[in-house]
Image (cartoon, rainbow, N blue to C red; front, side, top):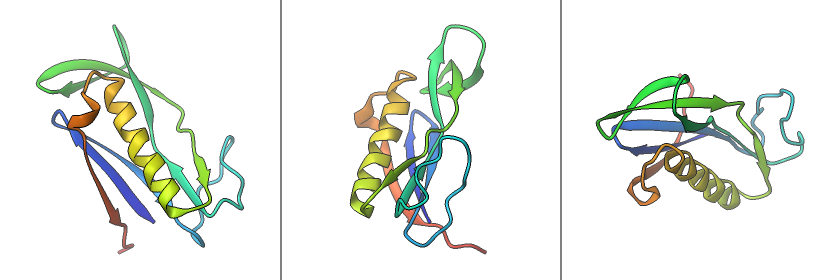
Length: 111
């Protein structure tokens, strides 16, 4: 399992990439069990009122969350590319320049 993390504006978003042979979570809307790589991460957007208050780039932003939309991929490269794009898009949805998002990918080693 890989953790794909984006950091910008003083906040972080981390999603999980389940690799070939790992058991991805199963729930309504999950991709086909046969997908070798499955990406799962929160989706959110900025709202005028309500939601959850987050501090981003020193200002308070109200954020509403959507149900995570898991996605299946055939190759690791496709999955990582899509994960990075997803994270950058989430930051853009709350007013952070996509180019300011620093992405890291790390192997999650169970303890």
